[in-house]
Length: 267
Image (tube, rainbow, N blue to C red; front, side, top):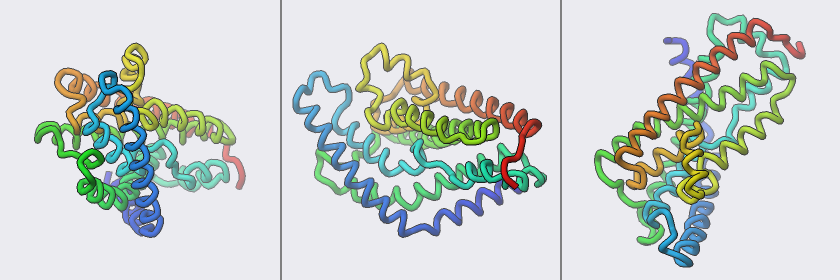
């Protein structure tokens, strides 16, 4: 366990060095979030009765989404992991006294946390001081905030376990680019990355909320504002735990099987 913690710390510190890139990301995410809120205001004003969330909850959802995009986005992959499979450099990692799955999992988690750590604080500070109809609201309550933190941690782990399945698919093919693009597009849409899940038709939303994608950014961001509470919140947390265990188990089995049959490309 110590070697994986050390590896996690190494990649976390390494990721925190890219401050200029993070500054550019802060500017991009801030203006993108502001445009999203303006669009949501237009939808709300056109028909307030059919709007499925309060504007305060919508604004909080969008600002947290932008603040933690580096942590929860499907588009952020570790190119070095995918390249190591294509080039054959994975042979060096297979020679080390470590498990590939645990090594990649700790590395991916550290990379996502470091990216979010540099961006989230400036975005959230600015969002708090915006005009009332655009600002980040206070949490629905101390209990909701505690569950928000818990589910945010689970959301990161579920996201990484899903991304790990994409990395592992590269061990079965020469190139996993096509599968990666398909899975990242599905994740972006079905997690509520483009449209929050409450805006989907009721029957479709009921199905989507059972899938692992809903256990990512959808759950913590809605819990913070109180849009997801009570029995529905506990059910969502249970699904997060279930999908985390299921995808980690599947990833370990697939990775172990691939290690036995892996043919190294390159050299």
